[in-house]
Length: 390
Ligand SMILES: [Zn+2]
Image (cartoon, rainbow, N blue to C red; front, side, top):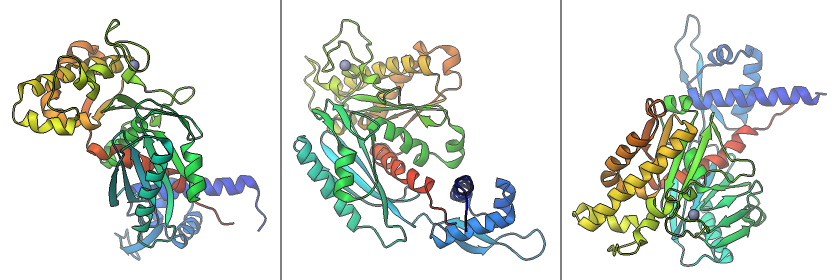
């Protein structure tokens, strides 16, 4: 058949609309799809037939009839393919094999003893290959790989600057695609975390409604993933969200970025190393047992961190007016000891109209937000470029 480019494009768009409708609202009949999308029944039938042939949609049971024959219902086959989502942290790499709806099939963690890019690349490849071997048979097999890294990443997937890894200009995406022959997406860990929370951490109703969201990742530093009108806000060159380096004490301690008094010196794990503190450990996970046993030193550090977190969050809320703000990363696990001070500081400093309907939550995915957000980022291009046959 001879078809113009425009027709092919329209068909492709319609097909991805139909797939998305089934993915988010199944079970649906062909008649329901037709009335919900405005596409006529013949078009729906053709597109659904293609999606079934590709293994992305399947028919099940009989639905309710409004008179006449009961219709077959359509469901999304989330196991038509798999993706791998990876978070590179300072002390470890964690990865998951997930299906196309973010359900975790297998999960692995490798410790990182050093940060030399060649060594880290070797470990990433080792993790990916182990996860690939765990993939069950499926029509599309592994459709992509997503990574969240603690640094600034440009559009080509090159890590430009990752101070906590000591990296500059590492072409991560290009190297992995060459090595594996699969599409790779690389993003900053906080941006990935924001997507993980939005797409896999909320029930369907919230996911549809929340458009302006800030995800604060508080761990070895602080980064923010900003979603504006449902899309990640990257800034002009992709570097937005470095909130950890906003100044909250103009004459404060020196920061590795070259400035002074940066937020993350007071509100991330960097606060543990402040002079005169002498804490029993320097990682949140190791401090939690001390907090549970009422260690006064640890409790007072968590309360101070809570207060400082609240101060920075109030600045962000006043600047961006988000409808939801989610706190994630390792420090979210210290919630019982820092939440009250944090909320008090936000109440004292955020402007009244800004905080009136603001929802503040802690991450529902815990330490998995970035990994699952990276998996989502690898899934979205596959679902969006479902092929059209003419
Ligand atoms: Zn700084």
